[in-house]
Length: 94
Image (cartoon, rainbow, N blue to C red; front, side):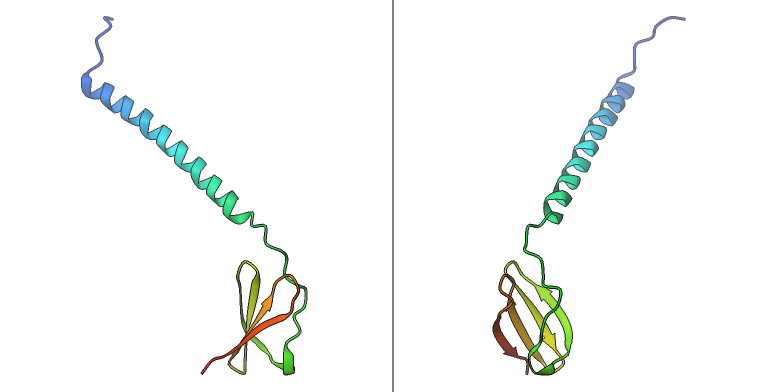
């Protein structure tokens, strides 16, 4: 058989598939890199136990870079220092 030249639209399609494959591989590498950097957070660990003042009962919990907060059933937010565990601030929710 004779070697026929490749049609222009087929050549374009082949190049487009190759470029899109490269872009997809680069995107997957970027997403994996972002997940690894975001999930490997170097924050100090939380204490195993948190003693709440006045026998309050915890309803919710959240944390920041150097603090963590506990919302109690008495509508108070208790903000603790992450390193020392000392109570930093008490906020009353009205």
